Image (cartoon, rainbow, N blue to C red; front, side, top):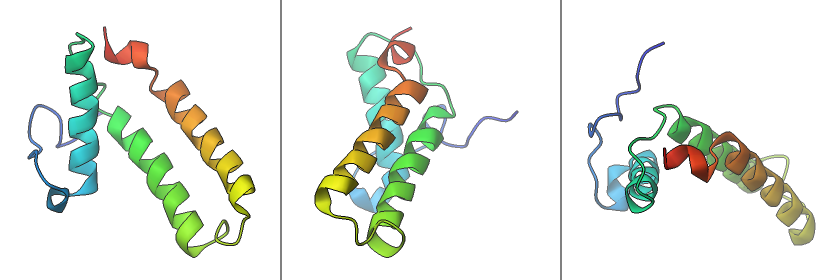
Length: 94
């Protein structure tokens, strides 16, 4: 299994024009730094990005587009729960 290109500081930090994935990787690295951790699993940003991007695309253009806000909130909360299970904070601090 290889290591994604964004690992090891290969990703530029900065504005949103740098790309959403770059900002996500930077945010996860900031969480690690702030909590005294040492590293992010190189695949964690992919898991988080996939969940968030998939949910957004389904809400904007597909199956979840016409859900009532309350129902969508339930779906959103489930996705956020899945993210915290897949990338629990304690894994970012060791």
